[in-house]
Length: 135
Image 1 (tube, helix red, strand yellow):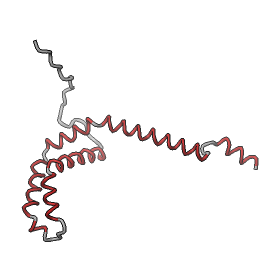
Image 2: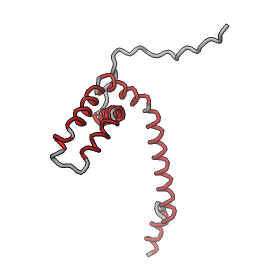
Image 3: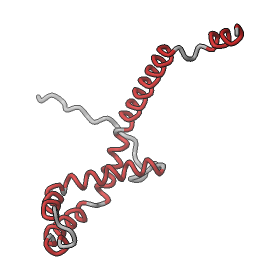
Image 4: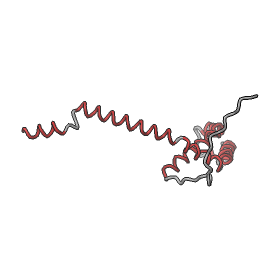
């Protein structure tokens, strides 16, 4: 008898593909992930066009026409709602990691601020008021 395969964790049913509205900045992050995903898929075509267009100005329009059409057709082919949904799901999957990084960054900032204040003798209002009163 084979060992039982673990069942995937139960998930709540999603009423729609994109159930949570995002803020403008969050939508921008999702869109950037989406564009990066499409550019990664079409990297070879983009590289070919860039190599052809290197050191050319307006002549690249007709000299690199085939490369441009190949690159654009690849990007149009992969710029689908499915890839956009995948980018949105990736954004939601990595939100806890982004939150952890933000908290770590804030903790380091506070440590550096504390060190700076200790080094320069700042944030000691008792000493400052005592010095001013003795003058």
